[in-house]
Image (cartoon, rainbow, N blue to C red):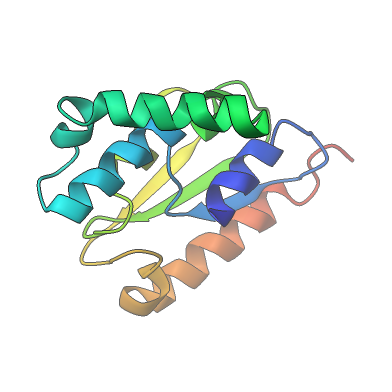
Length: 148
């Protein structure tokens, strides 16, 4: 959730740059994935047969708590942000599939996506430590004076 929260915070321009690993693209997509993970089917089950239950859960959250989960969309915020974003996502992520970062990156050409081979959820530093450090440090070095 932290990666998605940080992405949503980029609507504020006080960041010089951000590096985010393994975010979800929007709450609907992650709901589809969670249903598929529970039943070992992939997201198609959530998008089809279980979709009415997911929609009912979203409606209940809005009615009961005033929380519109349809508005939880890091990809929508990232599509218009001016904040430089480096997305990192493991290609073998079995918690949040890499397609979430791909959905985010395709909506804003200024976003850089590094898909890390053989890395699971938030595992880029474990599988590619030197490259991870190099990329992250270089990213912040390149953007340190942004907005000053």
